[in-house]
Image 1 (spheres, rainbow, N blue to C red):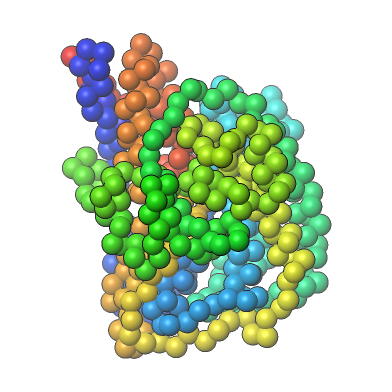
Image 2 (cartoon, one colour; image 1 turned 60 degrees about the vertical axis):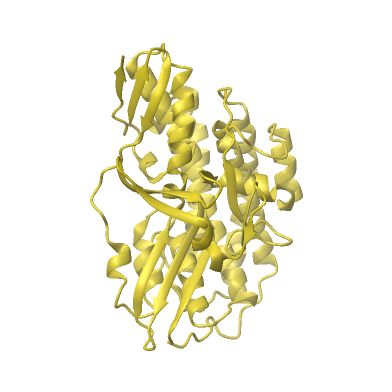
Length: 410
């Protein structure tokens, strides 16, 4: 992170992200239309389901197939497992130590073993739900275009329902716990973007909406979201055409879809001090906890209403076409686009992850954050900036200490 300061004014802030390209979009070319869900799952070990679900949605769109009914509900149940494990990982192991003055979760566990064990138990429930439906907890192998290779019997889901009931108590305790953190007085005015679905909180599908009044189908995503290269980073930045920077993720989902949370999740949000919207990025940890409550409740509902499909998947025949799909990864809206030839081979691919969409907003927040803290020494400022960046749960937050802060003063 580079900061240029002239006098008492911050003139420039840049997150300089230089890492080797991973070429996923390139080596998807020439692969069969059935392969992107398995290949793109390897992009992330924390949210592979998000990549699988967005890939499936895009391929099915290209082939003119709609997946709904019990198979669609199974996908939502699988996604709930990922929300539970990912949000819990972020809250307990990455972000809570920042608020409580610990360098990491290991140090936190020395003083509050009970708290960390609660988080690990909650995370394990999410992991095990993903494993039950996906075949394994990381990079699931049971997901395929059109559905699943195998659907579980109701009896297989019954023990998980009982575990989710205990997980709900842990999730509610998590909301109460994080609500007591000391949150810096900081707000932003970014336009917020998330999927919306009539009648329920968006997870695995929806229409794109923003707080600025935009509303468009996923098929028009590239008409509105413009990616651009910036000189100081290999990570692309994104902006809304005619609107500028924006933010996606839990605070966007909550602000745009809050009334569609379950009554218990809404009650937990209100008790935690969340209003109709959330404009303090530090309170995103509270929103993640509320979404965890919702994901646990939703998983219980889906299990209670589960009816095994006649077949675990719908046939998706190969054919020429362009398809687009987007789902709500724990970190925000994740967009995929694939072009297929008549044999069903991928001729082009595009993936727009939430982390890159948020880069411009993160830099803007950091500029204003640093401007009011120039009196801090560089070590303390570095730690505070790391915490600020972790508000958005980018991939780099996996590291407890990751920031090399450089300040040029004149």
